[in-house]
Image (cartoon, rainbow over all chains, first blue to last red; front, side, top):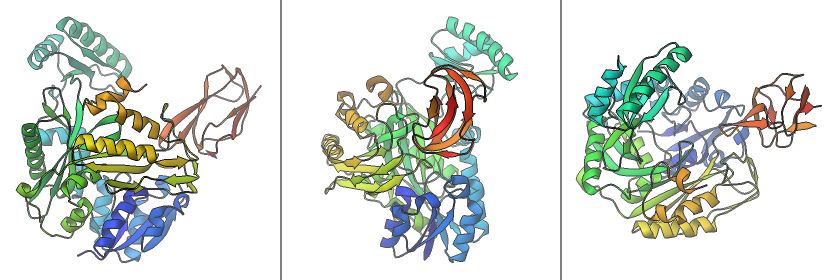
Length: 445
Length: 69
């Protein structure tokens, strides 16, 4: 039983968590930095405590101080939200040691999923497909060519020691592979002192599709279907929707099954998301697991009717999941648009004072908000200031409602990405469901 | 001539030295704003006479970062 909870976060997600706590009669405690004195999450909570200066290292990442506050106010749990300390295994462990419930999985699972190599290994062991590739370095160019012919071109030739695109090349034939392998091995040797190379399948026209899972402490695991999050800029999601406009029912079932299988193999608990890359042929490959609540979780709530934060709290307090897979179904279609304080063309940040902030309202609209009118958006944190979520009985209806809602959104004083969001939603390729991860590069210039 | 901040943020890195000659369009400092690195370039060529900021300082939009001559 949780009576009082500290929310170790800020912005819309802190406000979102407070909403569910109020519904469940759980007392809420917010923390805030000097830059967030007037933020909505401070006013909404039953109690709020100043934690430190604006910089995240001195405020929202200050684990010791947060735990100290939680003990002082006699809270029984800490909800980390997303970002900040949410995937910090050490923080989860510190909470465990301080006798505070950490709303998330065990620290060892967070740690395992935080390592790319370990996560890949764990998924392979659980029978979840990973991007085909050599698990380690290949010794010779002949060996590389043999492997590439087995997995099929195009493939990526990658230097083990490389980073930021250096020592990495896409090749489409054996001839290309042979020269790329030798050249990149030489380059990597001279740049990094390590010329070892490996081969990975190059996936084209991929989509980013993820599965939401919930798992309790009694061995029950369910999935809440998928979210498609392919529309991204700088590897950050911009528009997400559920269900995916692309995958078939058979693929949906199979992805859900694999995600549950993965959670079971990890003895996972609480809410988690397994991200996959999906290619044109609907082959899907494990990308990573997020061991926390996701920014885009509301679209899943809208189509399933499940309050994911409520489930997180129930699971953490030891209750059984009162959900059975066969009782869960997809109701209609939901789309989320993230509103960023940034230039809609260059994507450069646009901090400053918001004079008027007036989100659209309506029966099918859900707003998750970090700001209000006459509010200073500071340059210290992420540029996301709000999320607009719409629900419809079909994808076409949801798109129409999103278009209308975006056109009614009023924000003055700072630049926002709303013109870009509108352009995406109005694009025929988006409406046709051709949402791959290269959508913005291809269609929005 | 002055180099000014185009947005609020903190000075993450100063990329040239005092007394150094810079070309038009060359980055002088890199600001950090909303978790993004924003390079600030000189609008004209010149020599860096003085820096008005240090790494770690917070600047507002329009604040002078460096003086060129």
